Length: 293
Image 1 (cartoon, rainbow, N blue to C red):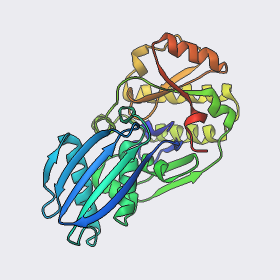
Image 2: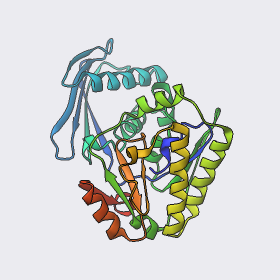
Image 3: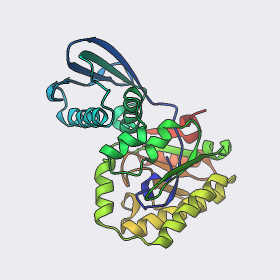
Image 4: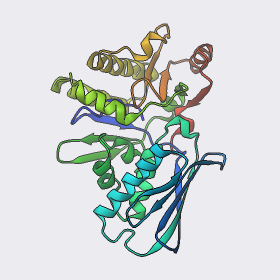
C-alpha cells in the first residue's frame, strides 16, 4: 500500500497494492451462547484467544485484553447492523489463520474486518466505518485482487483497479522496520493537527494517478520524492528522522507514518538491498514478490 498514509486527506486519491499474504477465517457452529475466538500466527501457533458471552457480549477469558476489546467492538457492531447475525442460540468457534508475522501489520485488522463482515452478511465498508476512523483504503485493498486507486469523499467511495508495471514493482523493495505503528493513533493525531489545504489534496491525487501510469523507475523515484516531501511538509515531520538521508534513490514510509513497512526505490536493486542491509534492515521483499499475482 503505497500512498495510504495521506488518505486521511479528505478526497485524496491513494494508490494501494493488495498483498498475497492475508488471513482466513473458519466458523464452526455448536450448542450454547458463547463465541470462542482463536487466531493463529504464520506458524500455526496460538497468537490470540478469547471467549465471549453472546448474551451480553462480555469477555469471559482472553490472553490479550486489548485485542479482545477490538474483536468485541466488531462483533457488537455487526450484530447491531444486522439483527439476524448471532440471533440464534448457538456456540461459535472462530479460527483465524494468519499467513504473515502478526507483528508486521500487513492488514491484520482490515482482513479481519472484511472476513467478519462477510460472515455477518454486511459490506466490509459498513462494518469498518461503524468501528474505525480511517479512510477505508486498506479494506478496499483486502477486497481487491489488483492494484487500485482509492478515493473517499464526504458522501461516497470510489476505487478503480489497474495493471501496474511488473518491472517497476520488482525494483521496489519493501522492508519491515522492526516495530508496528498504530494506524488508529496516527489517524487521530493527523485529525487533531490538520494543516493541509485543497491544493495538497489535489497534488496528492495527481501523484497517485501518475504513479499508476508510471513505467520507468527514474520517473517513479521523482514521484515518490514529491510525495514524501508533501507529507513531510503537512506533518512537519521528517521521515525516519533523517535515518536514510544519504540514500541515492527514495525511501518513504508506508501506511502509518514512521512504523510498519517502508518502500525503497533506486534503478539498481542490488544497491538498494545492500544499503538497507547496511542499515541493519533484515526483512526485505520486492513489491513484486508480495503483490497479488
